[in-house]
Length: 290
Image (cartoon, rainbow, N blue to C red; front, side, top):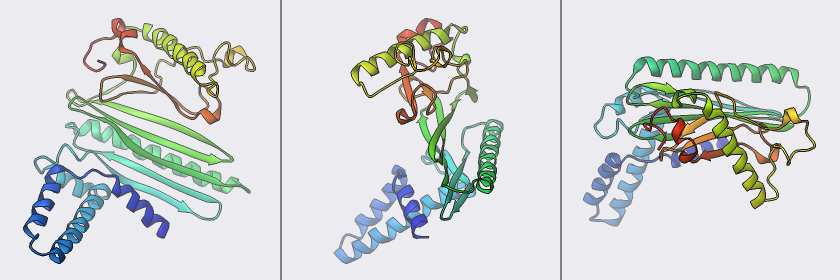
């Protein structure tokens, strides 16, 4: 139980407090500055009130929706944990947090995404239960959650991560990149005029891999000339047409590879920022990638 409380404490300590709410608290503190003991009481009460508000927003969709209607706070409320699967015993642990998106301006789009996230979480938990029954010895762990990677006037990006530990560990990332103005979930092919982006991005990534290995001998990528112990069909040559990606707040295209996808396990998840000049002529428009 103490472990769960510490997790909650850490989680909520990292959540930004909206300026409007912070201003209310500061005003209350200033009014009570006559006596030091009174001010301390106000600080404690205000901190507790903020914590209660944040907990409510991040655990209750109803509370989140109510706050979304408050001027100045609506844009702050984006994602809540709608469901959490939690298991912990001597040999097994699972913490699977399922997000729910709101305030995107399109209920149908939000509903479709949220339905997908619920299905992902349920499938992951059911697989965990199945693996628990089949695993006779050793440890099994699943840690899954989400993070907001980009939130601008034009774009919203949510990352979902899954880390599975069973002897070794496996890490996978998924992204949804949303055009907030037109209410569209973007795909990689949608960003380009034709499929020539596959070659252009792949060549740039291989170039970056070679430079990283030159700069740091401890980095290894499974590319020609650096992975001779592998067969040629195991070398990384090209991205998939629907390769995992997102667009950051500066308008840069970030291409992402899961652990083991382009290098040994100790390299972990790999991300590459694609220079816009390397793909500029292939872009369908300059609306998203700058």
